[in-house]
Structure formats: C-alpha cells, structure tokens
Length: 200
Length: 268
Image 1: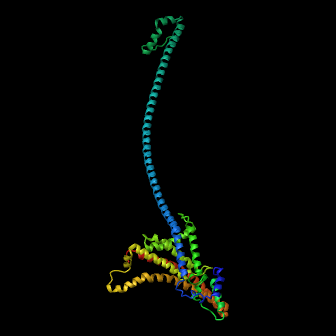
Image 2: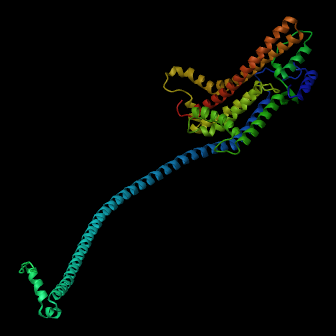
Image 3: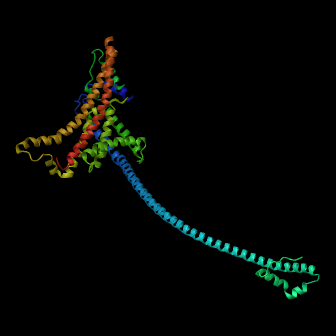
C-alpha cells in the first residue's frame, strides 16, 4: 500500500479533482519540475549534508586516524620490544661468555691446587713413614740392648750358679769381684775363647 | 501494494474502456495543497530518507571506535566506497577530504531514495520526480563552478575550459561547444540520467504489474495464464531495478566527483 493512510486520500484526490487534468501540475511534462519538490529537495539535501559533514564524517575520520595511529603505535611498540630483546640477548651472551671464562679459570685453579695438595700430602706421608720407621728401629734397638743386658746378667748368674754347684762353694761374690763372667763373655764375643770339650 | 492499488483504481475507472497503460500522470501523488506548492508523496519520502539516514549514520558512527561494531563497520564500508573509491581516486589525495561529505551525502541520499522504488510499502523512486534530480544537480553545479572559480579565479577558470594549442578556426567551434558542455550539457545530463532511469524503471514495473493485474482480474482464461508471465517479468525487473538503482546512485556521485575534479585541477 502507498503509506497505508495515504491511499484513501489519493483516491479521494483522484475522485474530486481527477488525476488527469484536474490539477494543472498533474499533467505537466515529467521533465519539468514541480517547484515545491525542487526546493524541498535542496532543503532536504542541505539538512543531510549538514548532519554528514558535522557529525558523521568527522567521527569516521577520527576513527580512521585513531586506527592508523594504533597500527603505527603497535609497530613502534613491536620495534621497541625487538630492540629490548636484542639487548637482553647480547647481555645474556656476554654473561655466558664471562661465566665460561670464569669456569675454566676455576677449573684450572682447582687442578693446580689439587696437584699441590697431592704433592703436599705425599711429602707428609713420606715424612710420617720415615718417622714411624725410625721410631720402630729405635725401639727395636732399645729392646735388643735391653734383652742383651738382661741376658748377660742372667747368663752370668746361671754360669756362676752352675760353677758353684760344681765347685761347691759360692763364687758369686768372687766372680763379681773379679769380673770373671764379664771377661769370659767378652772373650766369648770376641772369639778368643775356643770351645773346649769339658772333661768329666 | 501501491502499484496494484493504482492498477485497481485505473481498472475500475476504465472498466468500460479496457486497459489503460500507465502514464506519467501516475507519478503525481499530491497529499495536500495544490499547484506548484503541493505537498507530494515523494516530498514525504525525501523527508523520511533524510530522517532515516541522519539518525542511522549519526547513531552508528557516534562511538567512532577503533575496532568498529557491526553497524559502524557497515557505515564504514559505504563511506570507504565513496571516500576512497570515488573521492580520492578522482579528485586526488590533496583535496578529496573537503568534498567527501558532499559526495557521501549525495550517494547515500540517492541510493536510499532509489531503493524506495522497490522497498514495500513505499515502492516509488523519489528521483522519478525530476524536481529532486534537478535539486541535487543544482547543488553539484554550484559546488564545482564555485570551487573552480575560487581555486583559479573567474577569468582563469573560464579560459581554462578551452583546450590550448589548436588551430585558430577550430576555436570557433570549440569555444561554444566547451562552454555548452560545462554550463548546460553536464548538469542537464546529470539530472536527466538519474531521472530517466528511475522514471523508466518505475514505469516498466507499473506496466508489468498493472498489466498482469488487469489480465488476471478482467481477462479470459488464456489471459489469466499469461498474467503469470507478466508478474514474473515484474519480479525479474524488480531485481534488475535494484542493480540500476545502485548504479545510478554510483554514477551520479562519480560524475559529481569528476566535475569537481575537472574544475579544480590545473590542467584541462
């Protein structure tokens, strides 16, 4: 329907005036304007133009500009981040290099120190061993002398006891006085005394 | 619908005389008043279109968001089409922004009013009343001449319309031709092209629908069958009209941009 409410009106107009020829402008050639429509068209366009120029286009251009700025800003930000990442990488690599150098230095030091420690320990062990050996030697010597001394006394006493038994009197004091046993033993040691067959 | 109503009115009127083909008088739809100052239906539609466009465009672009919503995105598609596809391409990146609001207003207003031709319940192209194409053409006419005169000065603007370096006798022919082109032919064709396309398209649809209706209601059994074909043609031409309506809005805007560009560019 023609804008529902208008249809009866139109038919009304058509009935009362007659669309053909009743109103002088109805039959006007279609390429000649109705002045009211022409002027109305200019006014309508002017209103729309005002709205578009004042409200719509500035808003859209603002959005476009903001969008372009956002894209450019995003790119700048990305570049910044890239630069920061590069710097961090360089720093990390430098640190890594330093760490490597330090580690190798530490290893070298440790090796030197280790060798030194081993040598020291070896020296100490050697000294200790020598000391222990010496002490053992000394002890053995002392024990031997002690054994020899006590043996000498014992042998002397046994001999005199034996001789006393044979002779029948105590020779202890005399033997001691005269150093017979000692002399005998000394001769025995020096080899001057030839073992003789004891006659019965 | 509206057309069928016209058809009915005509059919009832001319029942005794047979079928009346649609005539240009069908385009005159007074609401009140008389003579040149009648308030007509196309005027109401023009006001409606300005209201729709104004409200729609302002509300959808009010946020001016960087990431547009669906509505803003749709407006931006149309705006991009005019701004980049017409204004910047033709006028050039230096001056186009100044004329973008004009071209965008022209395009949207013409497009919506043309589409009224196939949108129920309106189904009447506003631009089939020549007053409206003339109104828009007068604005374009004023804009491009004033822009040219302000850019180059009146004398230089007028002399710039004539190509240089031609043999003298040819100027006798060229000068009136060029001035006629700039001052008469361009505005005349701009207005008539839009008017003619809308007028003829609407007339065609009227013919198919009124004819179909008449055959269906008043014809014999054979004609009743044929009326299906008539309605089918009306459907096909409605789709075809949609294309033409868009195309005419585009062409009008494109030519307006071309004329402005011609007027302000340094070389002819």
